[in-house]
Amino acid sequence: MMTRVYTFFFILVSVVASAQVLSERERAIVVDDILEDRFNVLLPKLMDRVNIDMWVIISREYNEDPVIKTMLPATWLNARRRTILVFYRDQEKNSIEKLAVARYNIGKSITSAWDKEKEPDQWEALIKIIEARDPKKIGLNYSDNFGLADGVVKTDYNEFIEALAPAYASRIVSAEKLAIGWIETRTSKEMEYFEQLVDITHDIIKDAFSSKVITPGTTTTDDVVWYLRQRVTDMGVETWFHPTVDIQRSNEKLASHIESFSNRPEGKVIQKGDLLHCDFGITYLRLNTDCQQHAYVLKDGETQAPQFLVDALADGNRVQDILTTNFTTGKTGNQILLKALKEGREEKLVPSIYTHPLGLYGHSAGPTIGMWDSQGGVPGTGDYPLYENTAYAIELNTTVTIPEWEKDIRIMLEEAGFWGENGFSYVSGRQENLILID
Image (cartoon, one colour):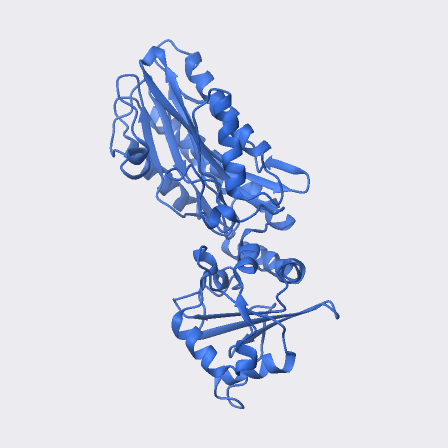
């Protein structure tokens, strides 16, 4: 009888969670609708902001520029042969042309502008497009600091420059800020689905941190990790990194930052009284989540977590508040980081902040607000300013002394947050109470 009840409960939870996930065909409609809106509404604003009137993106199949991968329609999983995109912004006409120097239209938004039978040379076809529009600045995706904005490869760059007349070659500039703006900016349409994505992430974590999955004394952290992986696969979504689950308990020394981030123990048996922590994120509708939460395994006779763990989580929430109240449009990631750390320490907290942009990529482009091993600031990516309509993984920790355990513990939190014209908000809430495993 218990087996039947367990099986029914598992199926019920699976159906409820999976009901939130669209079919592949429905997803394609959503992806293309979002993409068309981004091309027609967002892209002209970004090009005007950085004062680039032509953006040329060049990629070859299976070696795609990270930017072009975010621009392909739902039915294009990769570029084809050599794919060249040209976006031309005419401010006087308030128009934007979206052209492909390729043999095919790229979805419904980007029109093919190359007839290979009339002009066999693809580079020559590109040059004619450029000369006909006579742009003031030609943006190419190269960048010293942002890998996601450094997508043009050496061969394509060299061949393009060789084909281009010197008068136009002198107009080439880095499209770094344009590429970052494209990747980091979230539209209102995207945010509607992003909230659903975060909800799904939270639901999966609650599912994994439950007595349905965890039996103290038997279940290992690896069991929970692989449950998370399988759960995501069964729902028809993906993970963008391998999840982790780790334990803090009274009789074990607190791991160092290096051990916590790069050498987490595998297969550790979960016991009653353990403080569990997970790091987990999923990919759906081309958006990504990144979430860290804590759970407590109740001891016999307990109905709540010990107050010292409740208070420790509150300290973690306080560090979150200090960080996000320092968000100001135009401030750099380093400025936000250093001010938040200073204020946290003034409150006798022991904060460590390593918050990153989140969206089309998990570790996305935009202002880096600390790294776990760079608490004095991050040169380059940390010098980039905060813009509105951007999302972040509010990732940080605080070390808390627990006299009852005669040791320190680390409260490690990560939640999706949004910075917009109305200030900061969590995309779909944050953890303020420990998940309890009975």
